Amino acid sequence: MKKILALVLALLVALSMTAAFATSADMGGENGVIGEFNTPDTPTTQGKTITIYKEITAYNPETCEVNAPTITYSYAITAGDAGKKITDASSHHNKIGEADVNASVTTKAGVGTPVITGTTASNSTTGNSALNITPADQLNASVNGTANRFAIAIDFSGINYTTAGTGAGVYRYVITETCAEATKIAAGIAEGSVANALYLDVYVDGTGAIYGYVLFTNDVEINASPDADSTAATAAGKTEGFVGDKPDDGVYTEDNSTADKYYTFNFELKKVVVNDAYASSTKHQFPFTVTLTNNTVTANVLPIMTVGTDATQTALTAGAIAGTWNPTIADGATINYVGIPCGTTVTVQEKNDVTGVSYNSVSTNADTDAAAKTINTNEDSNIATINCGATALTKATENHTSGGKGILTFTNTLLQISPTGVVLRVAPYIAMLVAGLALLIVARKRRSSKNED
Image (tube, rainbow, N blue to C red; front, side, top):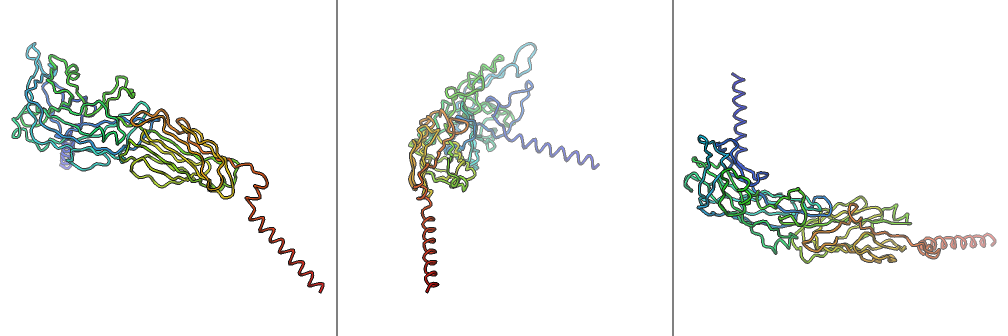
C-alpha cells in the first residue's frame, strides 16, 4: 500500500509539473508556428501565455559582451481583421477514403484584452506593455553582428473565448511596436527594416482552450492546401517576433541584418616608463584626463571597465557617454573599456606629477597619436585621439586593444640630463650635507681655539 501511495503521489507531482509547463508557449525556434499537429487530427492544448521576441543586433570589432543602451519599446495588442480565409495542409488530416482533407475557416476579430509584459534584467513590472532595456542588460557583440533577443510575454489567461468570443475558431490580433526613431538614435541604435506590426492568429477549440498560435508579418489569407506549409509560411512572413531575418549561411553582416542595430568599440589605456627606476619600482601612478564627446548618443550607457593592478579609476555609473574620466596608471598597468557607443571621440592626455624630473612623452596606437613632447613637473603631454574609424550609427573599423590595432600606450622616457640637471634633482639634499659639513668645520675650529687658550 505504501508503495502504491508513493507511486500515486509521484504521478500527481509529475502531472502538476506538466500542467505548470503547459501554461506558457514559446515562439523561440518555432518559426512562427506553435501547435502544428504532430499526429493527424490531434491538436494539443497550449499554454495561455505566449512568448515572442524583440531582437537587437550588436556590433563590435571583437567578439565580446557589452552593456545595452537605455531604450524603451512600447507594445499594444488589438483586434485584427475578421473574414480572412485560413486553409491548412492535407498532411495534418486523415484521408477520407482516397481523398485528401483540408480544414478551412475564416478568421474572427480578436477578443478580450491580452496582457503584454516585457521581461529583461532591468524590467520586472508585469502588464506594463513595454520592454525596458538598460545597461543592466547585456548584449553579445561581434564584427559581423550578433543577434540578441529579449522576451515579450502576451497573456491570454483572462479571456474566455466561449463568452467573450463565439467559441471555436481562429482569432486574429495585431501587435504593434512603438519607439520613435529619434529615441533609437539617442540610444545609439540604428533602426532596422523589421516590421513594426505583427499579426497573431490564436486557434481555439470547442471547449474554449487554445491549441495553436501563428505569428506573421503580412495581414493575409493563409493557404497551405493541398500540402504547402512552407509556401504558406513564406507568403505570410511567419516570424518569432520583432526579429531580423537570419542569413541562409547563419553569418550576419552589416548589410543583411534587418533587426535594430547597436554599434560599439573598445579601447585600452596603458602606461610605460623608461629609464626611471624610481617611478617604476614605486609603481607611481601618473594622472590621465580622458575626455569623451558624442553629440548623437545622449541616452544612458555604461561601458564595462576593467582596472588592472597598479591603476585606479572611480567606478563608472550609467549616464551620457559625454564626460571626463580621471584614471591614474603606473608603469606596465592598464585600464580596459568595453562597449563605447560608436560616434564617440575620445581624447587622452597625461600629466607629469613627479617632482624634479622631465620626461619625453609620446603615445602609440591611437588614431591620432600624441606627438613627442618634453613634459616637466606639472606639465601635460600632447593629446591622443581615438574614434575607431566610426561615426554615430556606423560600424567601427577597429579597436584599440591587444586584439585590435594595439593598446593605446603613453610612454615616458626620463631625459638623460647633464650633471647639472642631476644636482637639481638632489640639490636640497646636497645643500643640507654641505651646510652640515660647514657647521662641523666651524665647530672644530672653535674647539681648537679654546684648547689653545
